[in-house]
Image 1 (tube, helix red, strand yellow):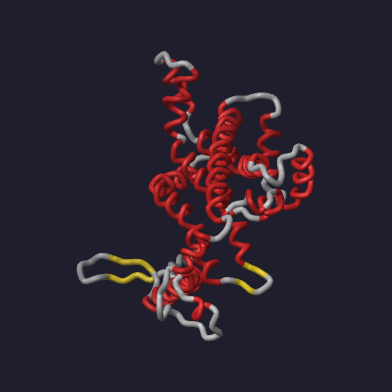
Image 2 (cartoon, one colour):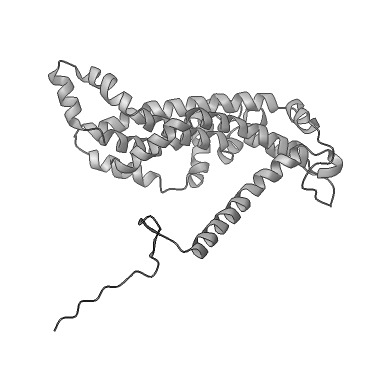
Length: 299
């Protein structure tokens, strides 16, 4: 005789409230430990940011002291003045903005057209191109640094030129850009293209009126990734360019001298360096959420 038994999952807890509704979830003890773990994780992740921020406002007598203080006794802005007036800071800021802006725009322009081609058109070698783009992302870019340096040196694009390092950044961003935007474009139904063409639109009008607006969130999300990668990059530009043509990340290393590290100006410079990333992120954060969500369900 068959026996039918009902089992209850161990982690499933059901409680019947006075109104007759049933609530399902963790036990109170499980919820407590989950919240405690989240708080501890948040503290651990935020503490380095807090320490950088606090140190940037400490006078030299405090940040060079062997006894750490969690709050500055005498807050000062001298570290920020020292960072702004340091040799090479303003030029490094201009270099970083120019290189990052050009690299991101160029990578989005080229990457978007390439993604459109592999997502909307069928041609010989299309699948091979997609696999190559994916495989390129698996190669550590640092491993290619010496051949790239020799090639750019022969083309006289190293040292006092930002063109060479900008081209390298475009190449660095292109695989991710193509792969990501291809998913967004492939998620747009082809029926929209066909309906627009039946209504009289040309392929160019379909691109401007259908595909480009619907890919907007994807372009924003991809641009954020490209901006962070190009702005925070250090090894490539430090290898290819001289100190007068580097970005703020490379400039931060100049605060480390043979006589020690100037922690106050270094932390102030780190805060200043992170401001453009924070501002850019806040400016486009609404589109990031929709872009990431769309990229998660379209392929």
